[in-house]
Length: 311
Image 1 (cartoon, rainbow, N blue to C red):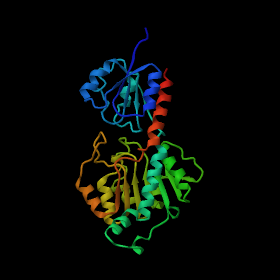
Image 2 (cartoon, rainbow, N blue to C red):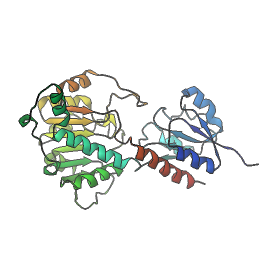
Image 3 (cartoon, rainbow, N blue to C red):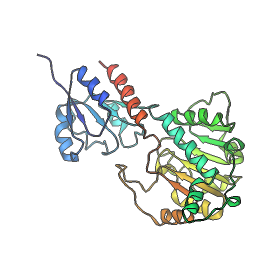
């Protein structure tokens, strides 16, 4: 008799992931609405786990995961998973790295074009009956210098797209070699000296927490547009507000916020966020940079490939 291989599905995923796992002999237990205690109750028999960001995967969570062989993170960020603990327990952790890179790159380009060309501002004015042309004269993306902080999958995807506009691109990554035609490898200081567009593409770690703070802001030589489509706490909201109110940051596009709930289902309306909204110079989107129908499917394929490699 074949031994049952059980997988707990804690969050939504594309159907092709489920189909692929069933073809590999896994039994799926769908627990998208389960509480943490209910999930922990099912962990002793589970060999696999599919999740997003709903739970903190720490020592308490994994205390009874005696048979767990792998965790598949449907998405990219792993800051809610204790990776060292998983390594010590022999649990393989996969994420769908690269699966939403193009989606994030396109989203950032969209934010930049919107802000450079005053599209949201002009739309609000026209809806009020105002036909303002000169004050909404914009800048072309190809006339700007874009500094990309973090040159992994999403940073590279943004660079490939931005190159088609003729944008000058400077990239900095402490851990990844910047080697792409049309992209200049730059130090952080060089980006702070030359960039007038700035986009963050780093994971959230102790090192990158509040990467963009008031000190970073003070080192920017030129007025600039700020984009964050990485993790909310990479950019300090108070520093964004300081930049916008001082005029050093001319506009910002924030797909993520440090005020986001851990499960990504909402956010806390802080005083800084409220004041940023009042300026009319910031576009907010609800963590949808990588959230497309295409990336949803691509991530399933990436995770299936990783899981099959263990068989």
